[in-house]
Structures are given as structure tokens and as C-alpha cells.
Image (cartoon, rainbow, N blue to C red):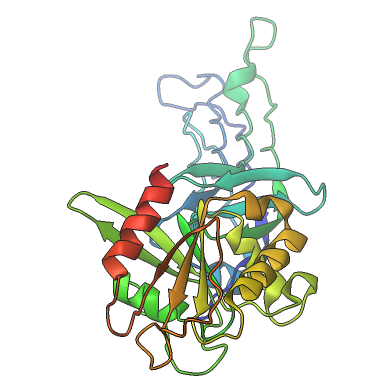
Length: 324
């Protein structure tokens, strides 16, 4: 399934059913009076956040959601049936905007949050409602109200505790596959990861946290190069940034600064987040090159996901940053 983080949809609630004009005619009550029932309410369209979803894939393919009309009222004061509601499930982190007004509607950060995004029209009153002393036999009934209608934009921004940030082939996918339940595609070439992957990391017996593997950045990502703008937005929701740099790069300090510059140009608040540095692939032959410059003023640890070197320490460091 493709990772889709944007969808435009058209939602229309059901119209209310019409009220009924009727009079009671029974054997011993030939003039039983008005008996027209009310129309039923039109169906609502409801958006529900679901932690089991990770993409707007399904929503993007079904772009129109029209709820059913309420049933018309009937004689003998029978109320029309309410129209059936439509439920649209979206992932946590979905932002909802009204296209026509450009107004922000909601940001679904909690699981199973329900929003009636458009309300069904109320049913019309039957003529029984209009009976008065002066008018005991009204021939008047209301039509149902029109249901609300909107065009919406849904944008998903991944919700995670830790975001893994690095250039392509830095080892992000391998790390998340070793410490969590995520199963990303892994290969020894750049841009293997083309979509964010979320993994749940179990920490001790009853604790856990979510790590996001963000596709590799390139220099110039903040100005739209590569897939930068498409995925930089997913870093905005993370609590902690974990920079990942291959120990074989020419200048670790310079590469870290380049990553930070890309984040800063996209959103200056990003580099204010708590951060740690993982220097990866330390199992390789020239990993202990003493000439490598090591950045200062940042918590760092050397790891090898392939050889399981210092991975427990890396998990402890991530949880410590989240908890603080």
C-alpha cells in the first residue's frame, strides 16, 4: 500500500425527510384529526481517528461521501427513519481544513476521536405538529432541512516520539527494523525508503514509544529538492530528533550541521527540539579512524544495527530524552 499523506474529499450530509400531511380515519373516529408524522434526520458524516491506520490511502480513492436522506413521515404519527451516518476513518495526526473558507477545523491527535464534520438536516414537521384550537385540522407540513456540505482537505503529519533524520543510506531503516516492530524495505543503496515508517519500541515491561523513520534528506531538501518538502513536515510532530550519520562520511560535524541547516530553513523551531546523534555502521573496518571529528554539545552514541552494537543504549537514550 502506498503512503499517502494528503486527500481532498467532498462530504454531504443527508437531507431531512419531509413531514407528512395525513388525517386519522378509523371506523369509530371518522374525524380523528391530523396524524402526519415528522420526517427523519438526514445522516451525518463523521470523521474518526484510528491508531491502526498509517496512511490516507483509502480516503484518497473514495473522494465523495454522501450520507443518506432521512425518511419521510407517515400517517398515524409515524416518524420517518433517520438517515444512516457515514464514518470516515483516518490516521492519528490528520489535520482537517475547509477548502472554501481555508479554515482549520481540527487536528486528530487522539485515538478514536469523533467529529461530526457535516450534520444531517432535521426532518420536517408533520401536520400533527400544527394543530391548534383555532386550526384543528391543519393541512400544512414542513419539508426537511438540507444537509450540510463541505469540501475538505485532509493532511497527515506523522505523530511519533522520535524522528530519525539523516542523509540516504545512513542506516535509519535498519535501526528501526531492529528496535521496533516496523518492517521497512532495506537495501544498500540510497533512497530505499520512500515513505515514513512508524515502529513501536517496547521499553522495559510496560512502557513503549513510537519512532518514525523519515526518508533520507538531501542538501537542498528545504527548498524542494528530492522528496524534502513532502517529508520534512512529518518531523514537525516528533518530540525528539535522532540524527543519524554514517561514520564513513568525510566530516561528521559538517554533515550534522548540514542536516540542521535543512531543518532550520524549513522550520526554525525544529532545531530547538531535544536531539541525539547516532554515529552508525561502527562495525565496518575503518570505523575507528581517529581522524574523525566528533561533534560536541550533543548526546551521541556509536552504534551498529547490523551487529547489534549499543542498540540497547540507543533505546535508553531515546527514552531518556522523551521522558525529560
